[in-house]
Image (tube, rainbow, N blue to C red):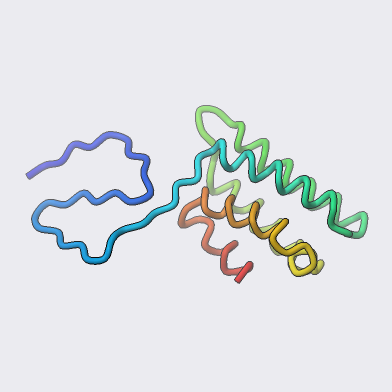
Length: 129
């Protein structure tokens, strides 16, 4: 049996040739590029409220600029590039103690962006754990 499946966008997709048994249920989270752009906006607002030294603030905003610029790329953003910038940003903010002091204000947007990245966001989620 051959499946010819076009583009799929969903939290959970099961393509099965044969029998499949699912117990319990399946859950997935879909974060759209629009959601990711909202997370960038929330991230900027949180960074404006966090106390960072000038150099750290400049570098953090450069990373956010890079993420936002890539999210606007056509025909679609390069997720690997966003992942690299997001990981650098997360490492910078955790080292500066900003994630611990700002709490959910930074955690929410960082986690949302990591969710948009899918598997590429796992290193960021590990840094935030």
